[in-house]
Each structure stands twice: as structure tokens, then as C-alpha cells.
View 1 (cartoon, rainbow, N blue to C red):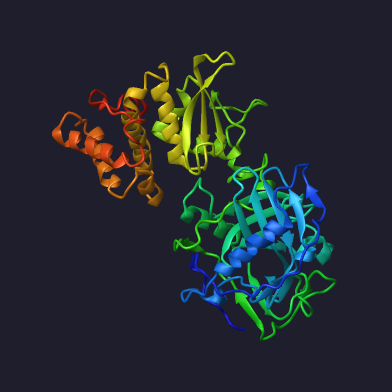
View 2 (cartoon, rainbow, N blue to C red):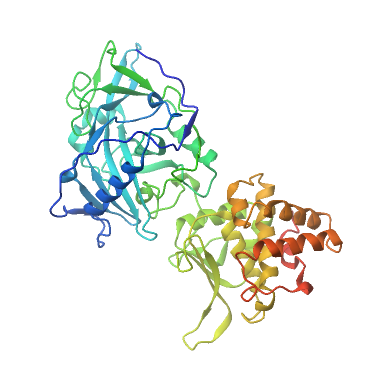
Length: 498
């Protein structure tokens, strides 16, 4: 038996071109799940998968023995099944390859007991952003659950449908075998999960979360033909589980130690959307049942820590909770006196967001009603817009237009110092500041604020450099600058406890 090295670092690398053989689909299969119109057809899912596989190339840096690869595999699109959830549209399709897997536990005398890991190719589509992603999903039942259920039970568990009484783990990998998502189930309910593309946390934090969920999970690779994702005999007994005395030579250990650390090589981008979104509380969100978010606390979706804030998005709720744990974030949220609805959307383009005053039916703005629209779940983006809300409070939309660039600089400095306190100045900070040169400029502005040195020539030069850097994204006709507003009035109040 060949023992493989621990999975220390998994890179998002291109992998070997995989052979794809598929059958034509003449009509869409029945759809299971919630009553919604289908926006992900089998044909669309197939086209997406074929385009993804065509882009994969073998990377010299990846060790296939450390990945949950299927080898060359074929996809039987004639047996594809669709399901619809509150957040996602999904298509599950059998994928038969050169390898399959069993989870391994040891009985009281140390003998290995194998349980099939049931796999399918899954394509998911976010119902709001329409982002597409494809995964290989493994259901890893507990030995006790596997004893009570045969293979067809797990074959029927579709991605965006209910999970019956399933107890065990679900594991999602990229098409080239990198684990990117894991969830733990009990009696069909998702108890905890981790997703590499969760924007509420860093990649490293997400990797640790997945590693903790998979702690103790061992997978044995079987080199043979696969039928419907279920390993053939000898390990199968009653289609479920079998104790064996000796592992044959063609078994290999995979993942003896799930201390996984991922790094991003820049080629494929972070996975999205989270394939477990439909199984999370209230249909979506990159948190878990144990996170206990503060809101909403009533049917109107009001945020418990400030009733002026309304959102029905659990991701935004958790993001607000995270921001509120900071010295500035707590005041940023608790002292907000204007009504604001925060939604996820893309009216202003991918990745864009904005604070917009809400006008009444008579076209009159009441002065205390706003809407924030965000295209993603990033703490710095929401902090910036909440600071803008404080800047706008008590002023008409016309009143703040004459110094919009000043407001941009103050808001960006606010979230820059928030991230600095958290020691989390990663690449998304630099990109959000326009160019790499923005980092030292805002670092200098932060030092000027901390030492109350905002009357010096150095501060003036730093401020004007910030204006120059941001001009590429904020044109002068839309974002006027005022030298009389080179102050951080709102930050001084919001950061008085820091």
C-alpha cells in the first residue's frame, strides 16, 4: 500500500485535459426542488462543463496522487437531473472515471472498514448573479448510515433538493480534484460547512475551516471502472459497506492528513457560487448554523443591532456582525440613524456598489431613507458604503456633490485602517485603492490621522496623491474635490473608541 504525503498546499492550477464523452439530450428532465422557473438547463450546464474541460491543461506543479481525481472520465448527460433551491439552480450528472473512492475507518481491532464515496459532477448557477461553477461532489456517509441505505439512495440526493436523513459529509472538488468545499450533515440538515470562495473570510481561514471539517477523514483511491460513482466489489457489501482484512495493492491512501493550505495561482479564480448555499439556514450565506447571526429579528428583516438597517440576506447579516466586532465598526452600525435597506445586486455593474437616496411616490426625498446595493460580500465594500451613509446623513443629495472625492478618500481610509487593525491588508485592499501606489499613500494618511498631523505639508501632499490615484476611477465631473474639506470629520467620531 502506497502512503502519500500530507496535503500541505493545494494550488488552483490547470490540470490535464480530461476526456469527455457525452450523449445528446433531447428534452429536459423533470425538475425537483422549489417551485421556480428553471434558469439552468441541462444543455447550458453541458456547454459550460465542456468549455471548462477544454481549458484545463496539465500543470507540472500538481501531484495527482494528492488530489481526488477521477482520471479520464465520461459524463452521461442523458441521466442528468435538475433541481432548484432558494438560491441555486443545479444539474447533477453521473461521471464515470478511472478512479473511485471509499472512506476508511478502523474497527475496534484496527481493521479497515470501507464505505463508498458516492460522486457526481454538479453544475450550479447563482439565481441572482447567474454565476456558474462546476464541481465533483462526493457524499461520504457515516458507516452507520451506509449500513441502512443502498447506493440508489445517495444517487437520488440532488444538490438543490432536500437531503432526506443523510448523515455524513459532502465534499466538493474542482474538476481537477482540488477540495474547495465541505459540509457536515445530520439527519439531512447541514450542521456546518466551509467554502474556499467565502468572501467573508480570507482564503487561509476558509482552508482551515475545511481542514477542520475533514479532520480524520481518510479516502482510499480505487483504480478500476466505476458504475454510477459507486465502487464495485470487493469493498461493497449489500451495496453499502464492507470490512476487509487487507487492502489490495491497487488501493492508495489519499488525504491521510487534511491540514490543507490553499494558495491561488491566478489562473482559474476563486470558485463561486458556494454549492451548499441552498442547504444553509434561510437559504444561503457563507456562514453556518453555529454562527448565530444577530438578525433579522422579525419578519421585516430588520437587523437586531440597529433597527434602521434592513436586509433579508444572511450573508449581509453575518458581514454586519463581523464589522460590528471592531471598535469603529460597532459605532458605524449602532449610531446609524437613517433607514437603509442593504441588498445584493448588480445594477451598477459587477463588483460595484452605491448608496442611493430613496424617494417617495411623490418624488420627494424625506432625508432619511437610503438603499445600499452590493455586488459581492466584501467587508471593505460594505464599510465604505456605511461610512458614506454617515457622510450623507442630514444633508441633501445636492449638498454632498461638491466634495464627493473627499468623501471617497475618507471612506477608503476608514476601511483601510479597519483592515490594518485586523492585520489583513491582502490583495483585495490594493486593488480597491486603484493601483499599488495607493497602499503607501493611505498608509501615510493613516499615520497622519493617528498622530493628528493633518495640517502639515506632508499630509497635504499625501492627500493630493490620493486624489490623483483615485481619479482613474472617479472622474472630476462626477467627483468634485474641495481643498476646504481635507478633513476626516466622520472618522474622528467613528474611531473615538479605537
